[in-house]
Image 1 (cartoon, rainbow, N blue to C red):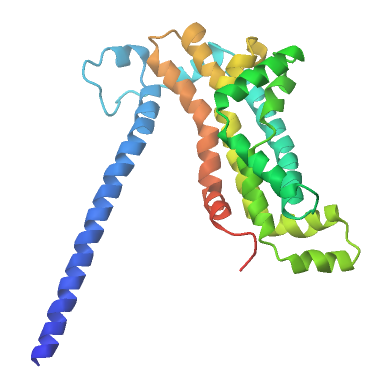
Image 2: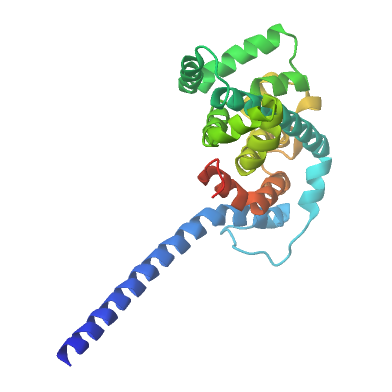
Length: 291
């Protein structure tokens, strides 16, 4: 009887400790979530405040009783924001499509094909990750300028069609596909490109989708290179448009209108992430074979 009481006491103590630990974890996660999400809430809230209401607030208000959509109308009239969106879509789609072709072919070559010096070439290729981005930008700027490709979509796209990290990530996934599949395909007289298209790409589709999504996000947020290589408003992207809005659109004091423009620019990426966040996590975490 005494042992049964001790077991019950130990079980209650363990249950209490578990509840306390879970409570602490959830409290910390809640505080962290509030800290992360509050800037987004403040951005959206400010975008719905009128210029006069925002400037009359001596103490910032956490809500507004008279929301207005005027700032969103100004976002598309003060500067050619629609053109910036179009330019960004062209840049993002073109860069992502070319990069996926280069990445898939390069990863397939390193993972499956046998040629002299493959390992040495792959190590040298990975060493490019050690080069600072500032040095790459300088050399790319000189090259693009010498080719007279400034203020062109080709000049925007070309330096971004190769990614060492994405090639490495996909190569590791390709390398985990059993060799027996490749040998069986060769017995059936299947070409390397057909094997890549019919076997390797379907098996590694989650990783390929993840790479494409991450590249889209990277292109949409690109700022330094587009700002450096374009000084013609006809080729500005949405990231460059924020600076143009601040300098020549609303002025530096019209914060609500600027926040409205930032919300408009951020919405496509937020929607993209909410739709594909599970695929992004699964593509990074999974291996190259289906279990």
